[in-house]
Length: 197
Image (tube, rainbow, N blue to C red; front, top):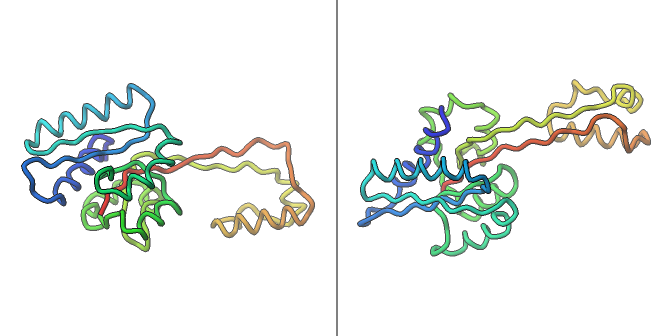
């Protein structure tokens, strides 16, 4: 599914679940400092608004650290709470769901969920329910020193889960290996727009 279709779907899901007023206003809080990216999002919103009289989708932008700092407070007030917001999977998302800020959209995304990466989809599920739509996915790769792994009794092919990884780290530390001159790990992320319940 294309990026543009995902954005429009997210707006449509929110618009369809919103109560009927003279005009439905949808605020999307996004993390971006890139003028070209903002232009794409704003064009998507303008096109959607033009095709759907009575619905106004508006993007608001905060930079990475500002959204992390301000979003928890914004979610507490109906006056400042966005209908959709940029987020990351993991513990913060689970806490937002537990607090009742995320909507279960499992049925809404079922028709096209299979067209996306299973890993990306799973990153935005809490207790088996879908609470976010992935649109950006990054790979996390680890580089390791084979000789040092062998010395510590760690087999890379046995590391399949986060707990396996933590166990390997403990074994490596126990073997007295705390630093290697091998290539640094490359970090990645999986991000999403989260609908509010």
